[in-house]
Image (cartoon, rainbow, N blue to C red; front, side):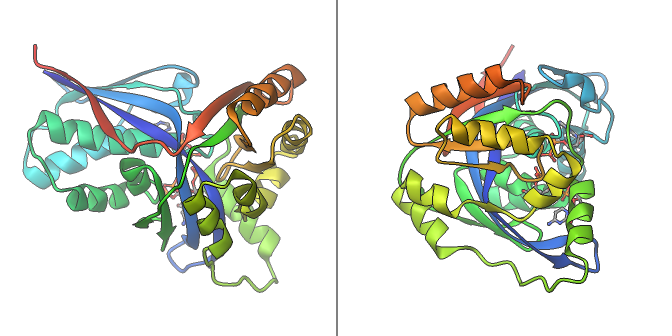
Length: 302
Ligand SMILES: C[C@@](CO)(OP(=O)(O)O)[C@H](O)COP(=O)(O)OP(=O)(O)OC[C@H]1O[C@@H](n2ccc(N)nc2=O)[C@H](O)[C@@H]1O
Ligand SMILES: Nc1ncnc2c1ncn2[C@@H]1O[C@H](COP(=O)(O)OP(=O)(O)O)[C@@H](O)[C@H]1O
């Protein structure tokens, strides 16, 4: 038997970052929106715990037990006293180390896939608490849609979204390390007062009403200056997309993927074409949001 789960990427439409905490994390007001780029995780019983990965950037994905998908399978098996030997295949389409939570998606996906394979039927609350142990972004990958994440981003409140938003994601060459971007944030913030992170009511309203122009006016990412400081070339990518007609542009999470919100599908195609031909990114990917969270899409009983 094998089980396949599809899991979306995310963009942070607001990422408000507080001061560094004693445990090394930062308190956040993190407004997640799931977008239609997906990894697919397939689990099959095997003689040993084994991971394979295909797709763009697969050579940069660890195939040992540091992989979040392996950690998820091991954590679920340990919780239930189950033999964890499965083959986990990751069909990757989410940019690796791109600020779109690809590793988190694989962690959430492996958790749901193993839960299904082992017929555990765990309640969502139990899966969400296991996700939070794996990483700050992992609970949202399970949930999908849109949500406000507080604490280090793992404490979620689902948000209503009033319509589809059109996006283009410009995938950069190479990745950025999330801890390094937070360290750069701390360096840039040194000596400044950092206010406690709070969600922007106007942004939550824009999501609720599905108003792309209002959302464009309220997009914000406190990690963007840090990502631009570490990767100055991203400024040219952002300018290319806005010049080509995007309503707004921002770095996705810790980057280096950049996100472009457009008023409709036609403009998204036009912005993607301009970005692709500009040479300021590796690949331009048009898509929509919100997207469903981790979902079982295949159950093969042979
Ligand atoms: C920045 C964000 C925005 O959604 O995503 P990415 O852009 O990486 O996808 C997240 O906060 C990333 O979450 P995730 O990638 O799960 O991070 P974790 O594994 O929990 O933590 C990795 C490291 O990032 C830093 N970190 C993470 C979350 C947080 N609230 N404060 C932090 O300072 C810490 O240095 C931590 O050791
Ligand atoms: N399944 C996975 N897919 C991708 N990266 C993973 C995975 N498991 C662990 N990693 C590690 O996590 C790092 C961050 O990757 P990723 O989650 O794709 O990016 P981001 O944190 O920027 O959203 C990678 O560089 C890699 O070392």
